[in-house]
Amino acid sequence: MTASKDGASFTNISVEEHFRVSQSNHGGQFVGPTEEISTAANALIGRSARLTEALKAASINVGHKPVETRDLAAIKEVEARATGESGGSITAVANEAVARNKKIGKEDENKIHLRDIIAEIDVKITRDRSVTSEDAEAVVQAELTHPPYNHVIPGGVAESVTAAYRLNRSPSL
Image 1 (tube, rainbow, N blue to C red):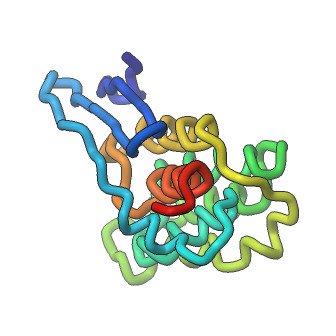
Image 2: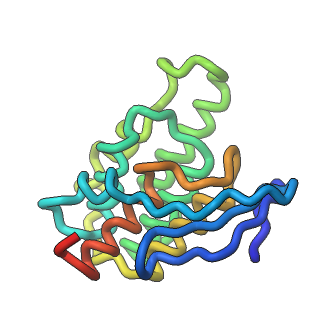
C-alpha cells in the first residue's frame, strides 16, 4: 500500500491484464477497480505504441482539460522514460502551465490545456521507445500520487500509456 501527499492510499497497481487501480481515500472508503481503457486504446489505433504516441492519445482524449499537477507528474515520468533524462522541455512547459493555471483560478477558458503542451511533442522529444509495463505502472503511480483527486484521469496520460503498453503486448486489442 502506498500513501499520497494528502494521506490517500491505494493498492494493486497492475497493467498486465487490464488497467486496474484499486484505491481508497484517507477516510478508508474503497473505490473499486477500473478496467476501462477503450477511449485511450481507440485513440492509439493506427499509431505506434510508443511513449510519445501515448501522450498524443491523451491529448486527443482529454486535451481540452487544463493542465494540473498530476498531469505534470505523468508527463514528467513519460518524458524521462522516453529520453532517459529528467526535466526535459515538455516537462518545463507543463510546469509553467501548472503555475500559470493556479494563478488564473477558476476561469477554464484562459488556462493552458493539455493539448497546448503536447502539440509539438514530435519536435521537442526526438528520442522515444515502445511502452513497457514498467513505464505504464510508473506513470499510473505518478498520476495517482499527485493532487487534486488521487484517481487516474479517464483517457488521460496514465490511461493512454497503459493502453499503449497493452497494444504492444496484444496488438489485436
